[in-house]
Image 1: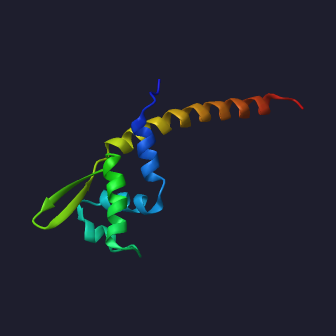
Image 2: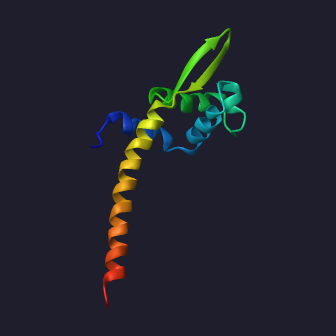
Image 3: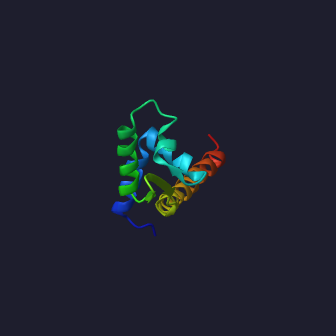
Length: 109
Protein backbone atom coordinates (compact mmCIF):
# COMPACT_ATOMS: atom_id res chain seq x y z
CA UNK A 1 0.00 0.00 0.00
CA UNK A 2 1.25 3.48 -0.80
CA UNK A 3 1.11 6.03 1.98
CA UNK A 4 0.03 9.64 1.63
CA UNK A 5 2.54 12.15 2.82
CA UNK A 6 2.72 15.91 3.02
CA UNK A 7 6.39 15.42 2.15
CA UNK A 8 5.35 14.10 -1.26
CA UNK A 9 3.29 17.24 -1.84
CA UNK A 10 6.28 19.39 -0.93
CA UNK A 11 8.58 17.37 -3.18
CA UNK A 12 6.29 17.56 -6.20
CA UNK A 13 5.63 21.25 -5.56
CA UNK A 14 9.35 21.98 -5.44
CA UNK A 15 9.94 19.99 -8.64
CA UNK A 16 7.10 21.72 -10.48
CA UNK A 17 9.39 24.56 -11.52
CA UNK A 18 11.80 23.99 -14.45
CA UNK A 19 14.55 26.07 -12.83
CA UNK A 20 14.43 23.95 -9.68
CA UNK A 21 14.45 20.74 -11.74
CA UNK A 22 17.53 22.04 -13.56
CA UNK A 23 19.22 22.77 -10.23
CA UNK A 24 18.44 19.22 -9.06
CA UNK A 25 19.95 17.91 -12.32
CA UNK A 26 23.10 19.95 -11.73
CA UNK A 27 23.38 18.63 -8.18
CA UNK A 28 23.04 15.05 -9.42
CA UNK A 29 26.60 15.48 -10.74
CA UNK A 30 27.84 16.46 -7.28
CA UNK A 31 28.14 19.25 -4.76
CA UNK A 32 28.19 22.78 -6.18
CA UNK A 33 28.38 26.35 -4.94
CA UNK A 34 25.34 28.56 -5.24
CA UNK A 35 27.26 30.75 -7.69
CA UNK A 36 28.02 27.73 -9.89
CA UNK A 37 24.39 26.62 -9.71
CA UNK A 38 23.24 30.10 -10.73
CA UNK A 39 25.60 30.49 -13.70
CA UNK A 40 23.43 28.72 -16.36
CA UNK A 41 20.37 30.85 -15.58
CA UNK A 42 19.49 34.28 -16.85
CA UNK A 43 18.39 35.53 -13.44
CA UNK A 44 19.85 37.24 -10.42
CA UNK A 45 21.69 35.38 -7.68
CA UNK A 46 18.94 36.26 -5.14
CA UNK A 47 16.33 34.73 -7.47
CA UNK A 48 18.32 31.50 -7.74
CA UNK A 49 18.79 31.54 -3.97
CA UNK A 50 15.00 31.61 -3.56
CA UNK A 51 14.73 28.50 -5.73
CA UNK A 52 17.45 26.84 -3.66
CA UNK A 53 15.56 27.72 -0.48
CA UNK A 54 12.41 26.00 -1.82
CA UNK A 55 14.44 22.87 -2.65
CA UNK A 56 16.04 22.99 0.79
CA UNK A 57 12.66 23.29 2.53
CA UNK A 58 11.45 20.27 0.55
CA UNK A 59 14.47 18.33 1.80
CA UNK A 60 15.86 17.91 -1.72
CA UNK A 61 19.17 19.57 -0.92
CA UNK A 62 21.35 20.54 1.98
CA UNK A 63 23.55 23.61 2.27
CA UNK A 64 26.82 24.02 4.07
CA UNK A 65 29.19 26.91 4.31
CA UNK A 66 32.91 26.60 3.63
CA UNK A 67 34.51 29.92 4.39
CA UNK A 68 32.39 32.52 2.63
CA UNK A 69 31.02 30.14 -0.01
CA UNK A 70 27.81 28.17 0.40
CA UNK A 71 27.71 24.72 -1.18
CA UNK A 72 24.65 22.63 -1.98
CA UNK A 73 24.38 18.87 -2.08
CA UNK A 74 21.51 16.76 -3.40
CA UNK A 75 19.48 14.71 -0.93
CA UNK A 76 17.93 11.95 -3.04
CA UNK A 77 15.67 10.48 -0.34
CA UNK A 78 12.60 12.62 -1.21
CA UNK A 79 13.16 11.72 -4.88
CA UNK A 80 13.16 8.02 -3.98
CA UNK A 81 9.90 8.47 -2.08
CA UNK A 82 8.34 10.23 -5.07
CA UNK A 83 9.61 7.55 -7.46
CA UNK A 84 8.17 4.84 -5.22
CA UNK A 85 4.79 6.60 -5.18
CA UNK A 86 4.85 6.97 -8.97
CA UNK A 87 5.92 3.35 -9.46
CA UNK A 88 2.86 2.15 -7.55
CA UNK A 89 0.54 4.03 -9.91
CA UNK A 90 2.53 3.01 -12.97
CA UNK A 91 2.02 -0.63 -11.99
CA UNK A 92 -1.68 0.04 -11.39
CA UNK A 93 -2.21 1.65 -14.79
CA UNK A 94 -0.05 -0.89 -16.62
CA UNK A 95 -2.25 -3.68 -15.23
CA UNK A 96 -5.45 -1.83 -16.17
CA UNK A 97 -4.23 -1.09 -19.70
CA UNK A 98 -3.07 -4.69 -20.17
CA UNK A 99 -6.50 -5.91 -19.06
CA UNK A 100 -8.16 -3.53 -21.52
CA UNK A 101 -5.88 -4.69 -24.35
CA UNK A 102 -6.70 -8.33 -23.55
CA UNK A 103 -10.41 -7.56 -23.51
CA UNK A 104 -10.26 -5.77 -26.86
CA UNK A 105 -8.27 -8.61 -28.43
CA UNK A 106 -10.79 -11.20 -27.20
CA UNK A 107 -13.89 -9.25 -28.29
CA UNK A 108 -15.11 -10.73 -31.62
CA UNK A 109 -16.72 -7.46 -32.77
